[in-house]
Length: 635
Image 1 (cartoon, rainbow, N blue to C red):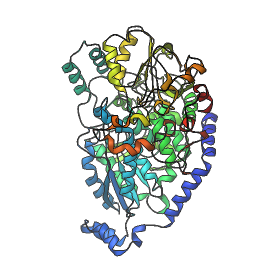
Image 2: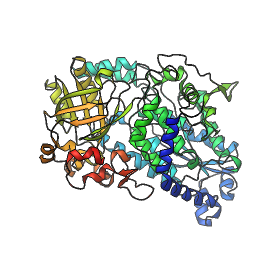
Image 3: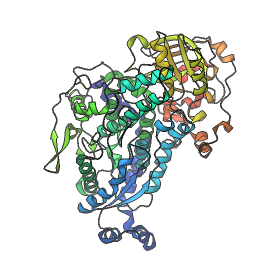
């Protein structure tokens, strides 16, 4: 089927908007590519440092610069379940690359923090900033100019976007992401959520809660719910950055090792000759749209309204929240994976997974088929799944039919006609909301505000029974400039309890939620944020808030003059952002851009970090305290 007009039109407008910045980026890439393998021209001392630690055939290959050099950049650590399997990968990669006629060197490690461990703690305030640290660390690893290609080993939340942003600075190099895979299924997600709510109500003990959590997160591999980590993996496969079918194969299996070794062989192949495929030619407007379509079709993480904007910007592509919203209106919801449903990512994979998803989206004209991928030209090859036949890795066609339509459906029989992401705007600014798990009757909430600036204050009010009513919980002072935009998952069990008691409940915040809001209507990433004088800073307890995901509206029902006359709340003082390493990131906090530009410390390709694609950034609306009534128009 030909590409649907809506997908084509949105892609075209992104390309038009990005013409100048994309052209500038590609010019840099082409200039770097024209230099050829830089290490061949390095000074003797420079080059000697680059092979001093090598031995055997690798030493000669690097010294003579006669074989493709492959950088390994890894987020391995053995603290985190998702990254622990990466320990063995470099040795496999080096052997396979050598056999394929290349030489692989471990070029650098990048940090990987776990939002699960830091959830609700001060460490979470470094989480979003860690993405840009990872990008810079990737840049450091590749800056030695010793390489012809890169394998990027990473899985979770900020790690994959950070690796991509860093690698795009070296977009003339072919690069491929190498996943580790999810852990096997443990405690069912529905039961985990039940125990969490019981604990929030005081009806389960800490030991009960810990037993449940340990049964859910129980082995090496990615957590099995469909949060940002697994959204990362699915999105980048559909963008053509994984080998076909590599995403959700379990760690510690022969197939996982075979796929990792094949990644090493394949990156050697695409560094030279007719198959030369630089990263800058894989990530373009079409592949970005393909990634968003896959995200929306599966109800993936809202964090990608930050991350994909930032990744696109690194490639000279100007992506906006309006693009997400318009694509969501054109893309049906095809997956039912927790927190949108009870299934986990292993159930999704068993039902046909990425291959059935890609096949049905291609057949429905919802994906660009004519893209470059690390596996070759065209997305059709991502209909194929990898298998081992007598120990040899091969790929076979997968029929476009789900094996379980309670988990995964085809485009002609969706769970919903639209994707699960909406944009809302009004006199409180702009925000995104994920509605794929929110019942239709809960998508519009009008209720009095209860304003908080800390999760502890919210928890205390909940336990005291102060929220046992219709309420819009306003959690402000959690934006990028205030606290680094931490995730606020800890609020959801309590809000779920209030909903189960029959109350009309919603969450409004300039912080993050990652998509795990589930049944709770949550307008997140509110921008302009309160810490810079955004309208959220003028909301008071008792103000009537109207959140309507269907109509796309977000307003406080207070007249403009009254709202403008109010004194903005005082943002957190700098001294509150000290301890647990946070003070080391003060420069990031001062430099970070707004949520709708990706919450990044990096400027745009044009060098102007203060200008939003297609118009003024929400940052630009807060030069001085303004009339909140103007925000909807200017933002």
